[in-house]
Length: 127
Image (cartoon, rainbow, N blue to C red; front, side, top):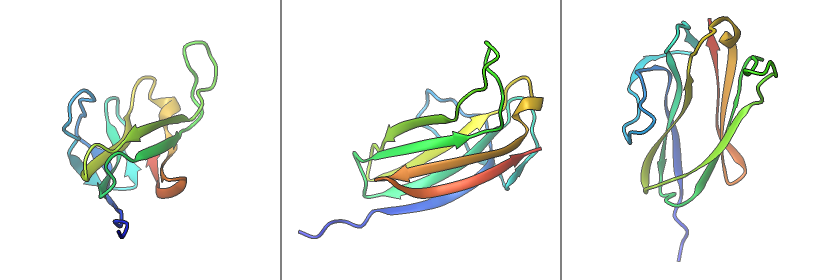
């Protein structure tokens, strides 16, 4: 039997509406852009449309400007994994700007991997 071809598309990127992380609904695109005007609460990132990959694993990395945690240590990159829940799936990778604003400014590189290969790599500039 022939293996199904997995289809992955970078659907949108930029600024999004507020995202309730407990909901299945993804945030709505507000503006497609590489440059995000940073304000506390601004949601940014990208949406991937993934077809024919149910049960497969995505891995992600967000490389951010050097900011410190509560203990004064520089925070490492954000990393994680996520399992695709259906054969026609939308995946949001992003973040929301929090206080203090000044240390969040700069380049945020968002990378998603599928089966060890980069399938999306987008740098968003927070100004």
